[in-house]
Image 1 (cartoon, helix red, strand yellow):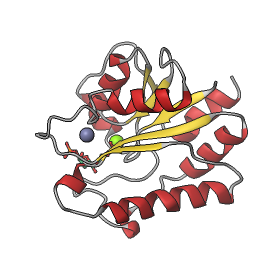
Image 2: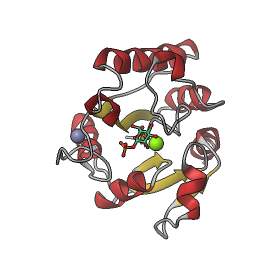
Image 3: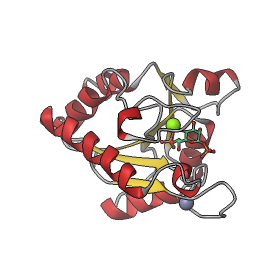
Length: 177
Ligand SMILES: O=P(O)(O)OC[C@@H](O)[C@H]1O[C@@H](OP(=O)(O)O)[C@@H](O)[C@@H](O)[C@@H]1O
Ligand SMILES: [Mg+2]
Ligand SMILES: [Zn+2]
């Protein structure tokens, strides 16, 4: 199957060092909704793996996170596409969970859901932890320059990482490949 896994903040929507704490703060990056819809209509299954330590930190309730993801699904559906499984890690950095990136737990959950092999699957992120999670399961690390991507790039990234300006550029590459 054609499976693409996305990080959320900084890839699909704008990120903030103050966390994305409300539906109003959840603002799609230009071209990202269209990119997901186009990929979906081209036969790609687009899943999401997102760290949401803001839950553990008490910045926002699960209901707010669910509202953001309902908005994402609705916007993509308006363009005739659909979003696949969305997995989030609600834990904090000190909780010792198996799902918080750079651990690959969420990627493994997505693979199990679709009974797919993760080898070579593109995982698109803006942070080093995203790239490390991909490498941990032999997926292909993909960095976008949106969100924290430029800052991540400036600090050094794994050598076999592929770099794109944004999710729209990734869609153009995958759909016309
Ligand atoms: O990029 P994804 O995984 O979708 O989500 C990242 C967010 O959960 C937040 O992750 C936090 O990192 P810490 O969780 O505090 O280390 C910070 O980087 C915030 O700026 C960011 O909004
Ligand atoms: Mg991110
Ligand atoms: Zn977790």
